[in-house]
Amino acid sequence: MDNLKILSTPSTPQIDFKRSGQLSIKGKSLPEDPRKFYNPLFNWVDELSADQVQIDIMLDYVNTSSSKRIIELIKAIDTNNNVKKIKMNWFYESDDTDMLEFGEMIQRNLRRIKTKYIECDDLDD
Image (cartoon, rainbow, N blue to C red):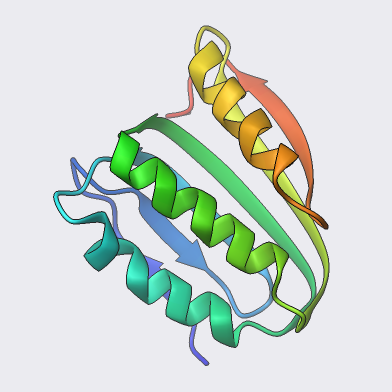
């Protein structure tokens, strides 16, 4: 299993998934076809096996169709029995309560992942 790196575009986030268990999603998520964009991430997560996983989510905009795929992706990590311990850092801009609430809503539906919410002045820093 190789690391997975996808560079950001104006409509898709940067993806940096490492076999070591360091996973990050950063940027905007409003792809025309979210299923096409996110399917390779699901395939990668299905093969992930790690003692410890840390997920860093740094999204400054998510459209409705992407939000569903992101929720499903995080749940797939949460239910992966080949991962022993999982932490998630949810970064949000200080004036973006919608993004904070999105992270809190996801957390309510997880069974193993514990989320730390990190307020930032600007996610692009």
